[in-house]
Length: 163
Image (cartoon, rainbow, N blue to C red; front, side, top):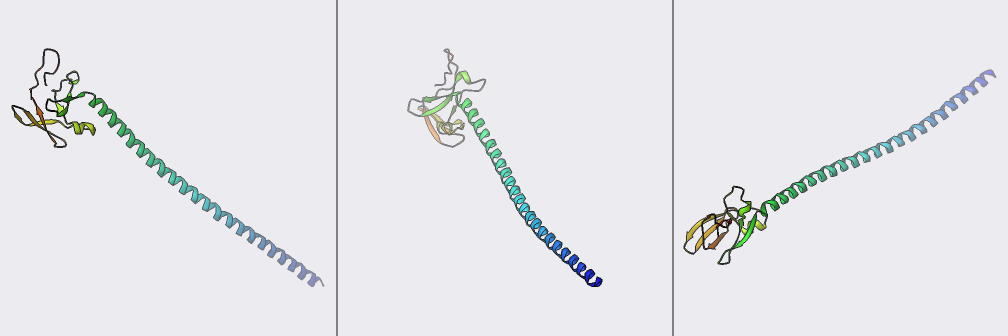
């Protein structure tokens, strides 16, 4: 009878261990599921951070581009203000450096088309004749005929004497 009791206790002990094992297995499965969920959330967070860093990098590049564009625009506005539009007698137009803005530069003319596009294309003489001169833009290569060519000679009134 003691053997049966011992055997019964051993069976109960074994059953208890099986229940604990099942409980532990259930806990391990639950822990495993939580680990998988946490790993998924961490991965999503990493993807979000990477996407945010990428967006920040692209935004920084765009800001840099825009700042350079603004600086270029401001530089052109400053440079463009040094010129005034001049209408030549036959109706052609060109921008001419203001004498007051020369700062040691010779008085010169720039292409009206290039000026409107924010560029400075110098008008270079191609040929001169009694009715005027033919000039070509150094940048866009357009040709303009300007009438009544007069060389740059300082005038007594402080103007350029150019036209």
